[in-house]
Image (cartoon, rainbow, N blue to C red):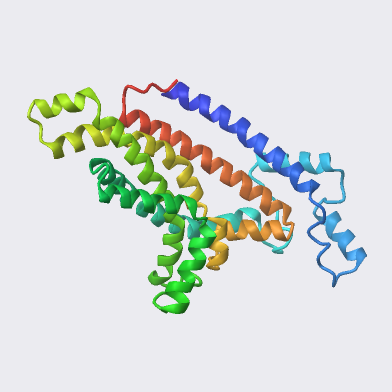
Length: 305
């Protein structure tokens, strides 16, 4: 286990370095700059701002300076939010996204696993067909469509739910629904196909032949093995939902990390773009490592090498 963790840490460091490098140079290839849009300031003031943040230096010098600072935990100041560090912005926005994403993950797992199991146990019946239709719609419809329909139907037309911000528990309903709809549908399909495969295994028929009740055989044998593909998906799903969906947060005006990331791209806030990208990459890698460890705990036959 220790050898595996050390190996993953080394690979994670290399991956984060490559992600940061690619992001940096792609960001520099985009036309424009963080201060060009500010037409109210003079060319001399723009030049002074570029010099202050080191943007007047060659690209490779900027890259070297940034990476050296990042290695020491210094992600610099935001270019657009004067006086605020990138670390302060990330850690002030992330709790909002993490709270929304955490609720969405619980909803997706709480609905997707039972729905997939019910569909598998009722294969070919109307219940199975209904669940398949709902799951297919959840995968086919993009999140902005779910957001728009939900806002119009429940917020504008029926006036049942608030649509902007997160100032009360009721404000969480529509964003959580939009953020968890696709993961729920995907988990449902994964669970259904996995459960169908497990139910047909010889050891399940042997368990039933020995007198084990259907409910006990399902919970003790089928569910534990069928849930393995879901665990694999949980890693990237956690990273995606905990950091907030860019689309969902932007539409519902949620002050989370996803919306901040979109805003930083629109305003060319290079340091926030870099810091957020490195944070997201680190979180995704960490979630995948945790999933591998959980995978080993659930199924000891899987060896971590």
